[in-house]
Length: 348
Image 1 (cartoon, rainbow, N blue to C red):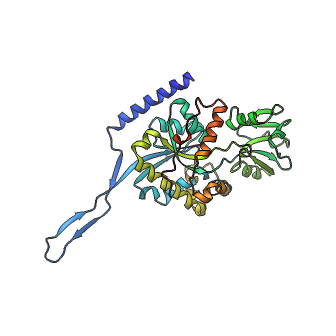
Image 2: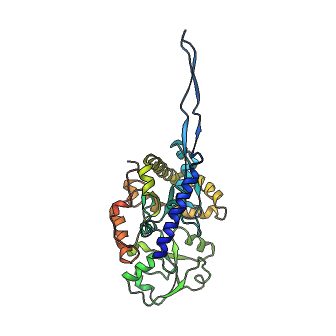
Image 3: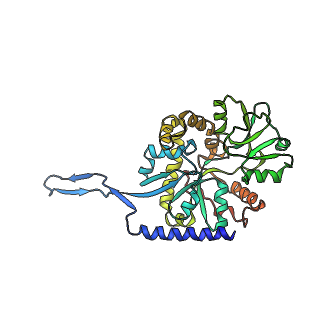
């Protein structure tokens, strides 16, 4: 913990240097909105110009390489929603070596995307973040099985090989809710070469991704959502630091509105937006993006969003998550859920 706190201090020191360096340059650009002349009868001709539209530069760091889970961002950008809001948005992809939380906390980006549990645990390092919208109402994290070898109850995992990332939060949670002492834990590597030939084995997966790749391999699979066990954090959550929110409410409001509107557009235009996503991530196939867009639809537009709109969050869900993380020893304190999220900027 002491090492984490030292890292936090180093990050804030870096942020200070970045801010000082930025003071020497301009953080915004202006573009003339147009020119107009006004003459009437014998009045003396005079030229007037409209005030230029001031654009504000902001950066958004994704939680992973560009995928359909970021479709709303790309739809907003392609349809000019950020520009209409006066924002010049740079989208920076994430990846295994990129922490959106560290980048936002250090001031190298204004907005970030992350999962709700990551945002909640940032408090341990003294990083106060505020979630302003969520792309997904639930988590598509799941266990994947060979067809005909699925489970009804998580305790049925006993006696089987389970490929799982060491220390992944939902696995630690499951072990507190069920007796899984009979599970043979094997390290998940991101590859499925050992899962495919072993029909009794189980692997972690995303409902929106791995089943597609198994289909390409000719392997029929079934899945069971981790959420069925009660661990269901919001996924792909838009957030800022508490300080940035307090000092830039109009910017946060404008960005959040465009973010939500972008997701609403993506719902029926994902086939047009996916090639734009692919341009930022050439390693992904359009067919994979289409599978992801269609399989994530219930998480984005269903559940609470069906009645309350895209981006919606509740204090109850955040409080449950905080309690779960605290009980696992992953939070130093069980803080008030109302301090970590707001729905103030969501369209009414």
